[in-house]
Amino acid sequence: MRVLVIGSTGTLGSFAVPQLIAAGHRVTGLARNEERAAVVKKLGAEPVVADLFDVEQLIDALNGHDAVVNLATRVPVGGKLIRSSSWAENGRIRIEGSKALVRAATAADIGIFVQEGVALAYADGGDRELDEDAPVVAAGPPQTSLIAHDTVAGFAQDGRIAVRLRIANVHGDEPLTRWIVKGARGLGPSYFGSKDGWITPIHPSDVGSAVVAALTAPSGVYNVGATPLRKREFGAVVAAVAGARKARTVPITFGFLKILARSQRVVSTKLTEATGWKPERPVVTSEWFPSP
Picture 1 (cartoon, rainbow, N blue to C red):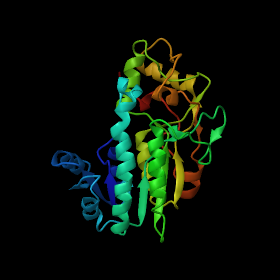
Picture 2 (cartoon, rainbow, N blue to C red; picture 1 turned 30 degrees about the horizontal axis):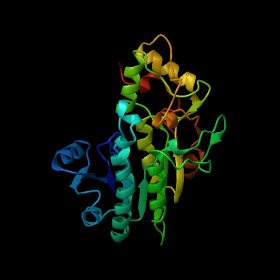
Picture 3 (tube, rainbow, N blue to C red; picture 1 turned 90 degrees about the vertical axis):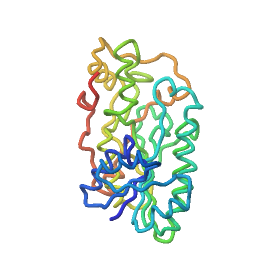
C-alpha cells in the first residue's frame, strides 16, 4: 500500500514511518519545507513538500496513494501547557488541517484515512474501564481532537474507510515526558490528580504499530493504550527514573493540568479484536523513560 504520512517527523510519525516501511508499505512523508524534507528522507520515506492547509497542494501530494495517515500536532510543553493560547496552533492543525485533508483525500480518491486523536477527551471515569462508548468532554485542548474526528468520520462514504484513533498518554523519549522527569528531579509532580486514580500510558513505538494495524481496521473510533495502572504506581516509576525520594502530585489543578488529573482507565480491546494489535510494551517500566 502507498501511504502518505502527515506529521511524519514528529513524536508519533518518527516511530510510525519506519514501522510502516517494515510492514511493506511505500511511505511518503509530508514536509512543510526542504529542511524537514531532509528529516523525512533520513526516516527512510520519500519526502513531498506541501502546505497542510492548502487543498490543491495536498491533492498533488496525495495523488497515487492508497491511504493517508494524519499524525500532525503541535503540543506545547512545560509551563506553556497551562496557557490556553499555547494550544492555538495545535487546534488549528487538528481542525483546519483535517478539513483540508478530507477535501483533498476525497478529490484524490484515497481509500483509507487514519486520524490521530487523544484519549484525554474522555471524562473522568473513576475506576470504570473506558471503551470507545465512554462519555467524552468537549472542552479544552482535547476538544479539537473530537472535532477532527467528526470531520474525518464524514470521509467514510462510498466505500472509503475512516479510522479515528484515541491515543492514550504518550510516554517515552519525547518532550512532555522529559519535562515531567526533569521536574520530578526537583519538587515537581510525577503525576497529576489523585494517587488512586488511573492513567493509561502508551509508548510511542506502540503507537507506531497501532498505526500500521489501523490500515486494516474497519471505519470507527479505536482506543490505543497499554495496560492502565494506578497513578501512584505510575508516579513511583517516574520518581525512580528521576532519582526522587518519592512521587509527588499537585494539590490544585487548573486548565490543562485539570484534564491530566482525570482518572482514565482506557481499554483497547476493540482495536485488538479488529486487527490483532497488541502493545509490545504492555506495562510501563523505567525503560520507557529517558535518562535524567
